[in-house]
Image (cartoon, rainbow, N blue to C red):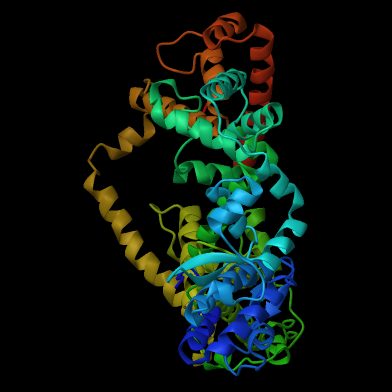
Length: 557
């Protein structure tokens, strides 16, 4: 029995039919499932109720809301057919049409048994029959005919199969090596050689992979085997979000488009799993069962109880702090609405995230989670903006001769944002009361620490040192700035591929102890022309400028 079902509901249905259904019913349900397989559209979704009814002629009470994609249904129903036919103990010679074994089918189409296994993964439906006293995989003639009709090109390519000679293997390796030296990726090499030598892409790929494994010192693609590291996956994800196409990423990282899409989905799922979705629970959230009730929580904020008065600005505030007073304060009703909305959105995101399979993430579900979380963050920011003036007011009362007012405001803003996360509106308190307590508690902890720090280094000559300007060169600061520059350079160089990094590093002498090289010198070192080096350098510099702008990197003087 198979264990790799994608959906536990189909596996549970399999278990029920294997254990309880009479033999005649098993045979009938296998035929019904195979018929349904021929009608599935991989782009559509199907309810579990529909799938179960088509197989058993009964509508189930379990899983009323469960839906399966066409791909999931196709995968699981093929396993269902094989497992239930196995339990039915059907003799091959009792069938009304011919039953072909794997070997017989391979001989008939002049393909390998491995090709038959691949055909099974692409839709050739197999059953298990009793043959010569033991269970074996077999194929009904009608199932084979239907597969051939729907996959004529795949069958034609497979039928052209013949064993490679040693001469052909050597020719494939040599041509692949020339293409790889010219900068072609494994996917491009495989495709071009398959067309050139009239072989399947899988044959070319397998031949090169086998050669690289057997001859690691002479490998055509020595660094292309094995899974990508997490840093590389993260880099692919970042470049994709900066607007680089999947085709460009596939070419740069020498991977197929399918692999790139899978990596993007994986990293996107990882980012979602790391989202901070802690919320303050409320019984109201669990009782939301309809869109109408949900809309009461997520609807527009209620109007203010009275028209907002123009606030009186404290004296001495810079313009950007004075602008905080233009945001109107929230009424009690508005406060409660926004906190209820923010926490409900996090609650909803958390419930959806619990359904996310990190290994096989669904893009629709991830979009829903991201959209809901973004709305929660937007609501939180709305609350924070309406209360920023509170931070300024408290900071003005705590500033002293030692403290920096703007540092206090920055510290208070962090306390305010933490308070928004922890506030429970259902207790009936005003948020300003809770936030004021949180901000002042933080100031009470940090300000004495600052005093103690300054007192440790206070001396009788402090005033004299404060008025005397030191014009000496600070070697530590110079070295620190140099290290910071090197770190910034390494950070932006990460957006380039290995060849581009090497060219930029050689051309501008970015490594300590190395002098800048000319275009010709770099070309000789890499085995390409001076003009080609110039083209790659121009492209790399363009990428670096874009990376600096997007990352908002500021280099120290």
